[in-house]
Length: 414
Ligand SMILES: Cc1cc2nc3c(=O)[nH]c(=O)nc-3n(C[C@H](O)[C@H](O)[C@H](O)COP(=O)(O)OP(=O)(O)OC[C@H]3O[C@@H](n4cnc5c(N)ncnc54)[C@H](O)[C@@H]3O)c2cc1C
Image 1 (cartoon, rainbow, N blue to C red):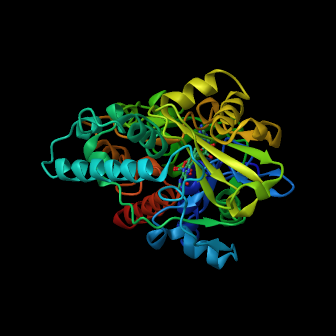
Image 2: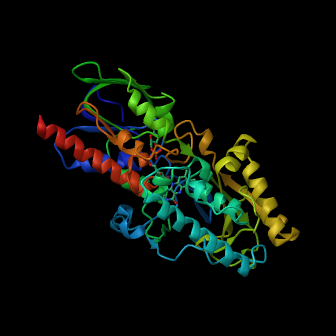
Image 3: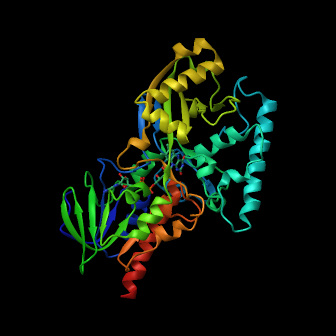
């Protein structure tokens, strides 16, 4: 679709937030277009066929807090099969690399850490989340590894109050055909312009001027949904500038999580839906999902500084490290059974620049600042603006719907 010269509402970004906003405005009389820099929709939700028999979510894969996840109803309405099996993260570690007794001890220490964090947050005083680690607990590095998976960074960079604000209902489901595929279907019928990168939003005049790689359009209102690092780095600029937004975005940076999928020959040798990880006693470790949905593959997950170093080492480094680590757990004859299919590089993705946002210590309040409308004309959505489901796809989608409601409220107030 080519872009019109005038529109009521321009939505920037066709990730979960932008699609949620566009759907909510569809029922109004407003003309609306989603401007997307990539050649596809979904943003950090992206499903590929890594092999003819392997569906792989390069970005989000789990319907977190599934009983409060708005994508569940959408999946049902679009006939996307939902898998409600519990994930294998906690109890189901495979093999001898992490013996049961150690695993139980680790889970106890992990739960105790989260309990201490919850108690400490009640004071209302913020601090780096690593202050809630028990000094000298032998599992501290692995608790930090878990932080790199859920926050994208180590605990010393995480605001305790922000960590506490996240609502986890401990129910995690999956979409058999892929979360990214679900987003693509959800957004398929919306008015969209792809390959349309927005560079400037000029809000100095009576109408908003939006400069894009496909030309300029004017709009009454704009909803911005791009990831925080793009606002922080002023990859998308505002005129006049919005220093409060840039400051909020800088204090809600994206952490990094990366995934890899490896083809597995002779898959019967490993259980379906298993988890593999070692008692490595270090934060630099992968965690592996064996044969998700029974597929002939292993998915690996890496986070934080370790993921960043592997991305920086170049394409293929995540797969090579995964294979070495899996072989160290399962034995050398597994090396010939594993073949790299695909690995993500979210930090090097120019339209993401990372995986999901965390608040730096002392800055938990910045999510509200980032979400706040400006002049009743500029509105902000995206996972980083969600008060309780930040980092997630459904939190992003719901934030888009919230921004759409703000647009409608601003119009009716005029
Ligand atoms: C590896 C990984 C695993 C994850 N796992 C899960 C999970 O299991 N469950 C879960 O719920 N969440 C998970 N997430 C997080 C989830 O994917 C995101 O929180 C969510 O998709 C963010 O949606 P969004 O709309 O806020 O942003 P995005 O999806 O990033 O959408 C923003 C859009 O803006 C576009 N854009 C950027 N700049 C411009 C510009 N200048 N002009 C026009 N368009 C622009 C981008 O291309 C993008 O399409 C994961 C993420 C990653 C990376």
